[in-house]
Image (tube, rainbow over all chains, first blue to last red; front, side, top):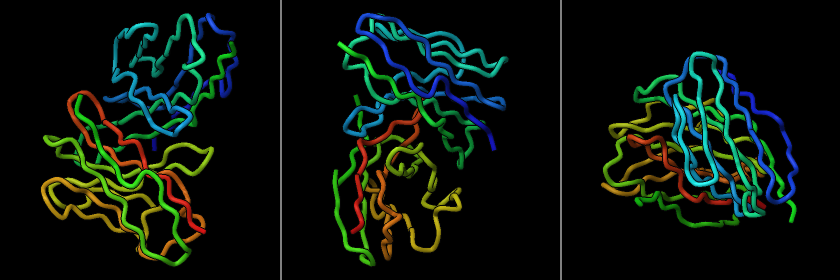
Length: 111
Length: 111
């Protein structure tokens, strides 16, 4: 099956700093999503981005499907950005298409 | 914004007992999923469901697990005889045009 690798595994930032989180995948995808898992365990959908670039406030994401990677940018980080960030992909959209998750990136933003 | 609703948010059960986890997917979605996340690990696919039948299941989804859509709105995951290793966060998801939407999860603790 498809492999999803996220880096770095852990990231510590001072509040106000910027960061880039990376997701590499081993096969062509037609769905890629970034999630933020908050301290209560909820998975919050940040971006649905199989290709191209999107922005939502301080967050933006870029997926270069031909090169099999996606980047999540966090600017002016806040303590509430802390948590685990997951990249997840699908290789097709049939009835049994499932998301394959990476291991996540644990972000800690210090005040 | 439409949500996937899961109940209960927490469940503690004795080993060997049956549990039913409940989900209400987004009303116009047709594809439904269950995932689980053991504490500190990545999110893993359990089963996908479409047109009132299972379309794919993982090796985790053994005979102890079953899914059902008993009416037009609910989607349930049953674990017949819980084991200690079933302790995890269980997520329900449904698929729409903008990617998959996840519920807030049920934290299952087997004691």
